[in-house]
Length: 529
Image 1 (cartoon, rainbow, N blue to C red):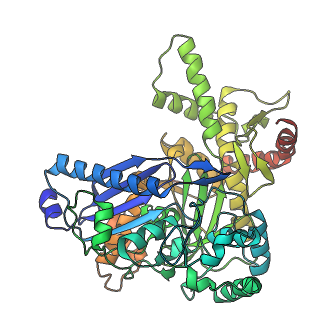
Image 2 (image 1 turned 60 degrees about the horizontal axis):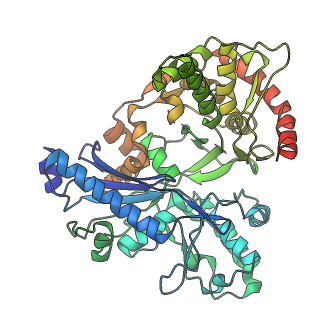
Image 3 (image 1 turned 180 degrees about the horizontal axis):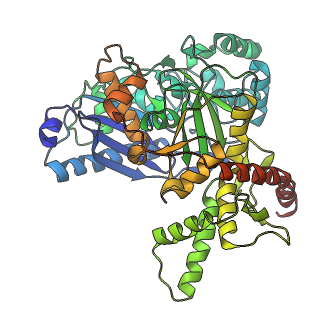
């Protein structure tokens, strides 16, 4: 069946550029993954800025696609020559700047760069809307403030997904979710906020550039809209074997936040998803705008333009993993070989025996600074009082709570200050690999039920394939949320866990002590260099 479907050109392709891996997923008519390919890559620090070269981008994409072709050939004996639809997504934000001839003016500046503090603060004050350092407009304005010569030559500014889509189709467009990480989005008009566009143009008018913001930023499209087709040039760029045929409809390019929402069925109002791994972030689809500006909260949108509040923490499981590795080293030194998954299971499950407030133990797993709290650098710390309950159970629980501490502070702004209503949150990421434990700790941190879907591990490449499938379906009046619920997830709500009252109360006590102890972390940053 799969061979016939692939050869008939009925498969749909999704490709996502993550920060460490480029992944391709091929799905069938039931939106199920049937083949995949991948390519590992890493950003590099050049002249003090994080970047990927154009060679990295194209060689990585081509290798990923060839890996997918091999998988299709090995599994089904078929050649990947035709596709029903396709889509591209990538890590959001950053700055890719081109001149009129399509030449990259400066190396790609990724979301990871923090040289835009001055611009982000100025734009946040001007717009009265939070503009994080990683947003494209912050990068653009910082270039202006720094007097960078290339700004005079600008013809097009976009994100990584927008760049790939442009080269595949010739279209200078961007999905609204990714666009919401370039510039503030008005969910009523499904476009950049015109008031803020005018404010920005007024702000830079004195520089007398030959462009205005809308001249150089991509056109905004919502999920399901026509975003062009794969050109002959694009087909050759993607498939160096020359097998793939042009003419494939391509959905609007999206960011990894939007594809994560699609992959977890989290695009409906009062739903959300939380991703917990090296970093942790929660995205909640709002019923109405927030009442006031919160610089701790990022505002983005779903792929169909609904407003989304995001609480993002740079640090989550890195220090937790380091402690697990230490226990593994001890076991090996004692002559015990313990499977890594079993090691995590034993230590995580031990945490369930701990006191609800961790017995007074505190963990600050900061490998880098944070935005939600006043921490500029990372100094991993474990802190306790002489009379704290220093047991293994409390120790592990404290590290699980600590991994979610900053996220909880951000979520408390949404839930307690803004009274944001949440019906369901879907969890995905490494924290949830050990059954029950991570899910239960997250439910306590979020004060909300947490569900984990088996398919959540398919990731953003599957998410953008679903967006391409939605576009190709013709929609027939279906919203994206209805399409995902009726045709992809079909009533599958995952394994749901309600928050435990004692856990929530214990986490509240823990987080109050956690906040008081941040002064210790700040002192460590000042003293340990």
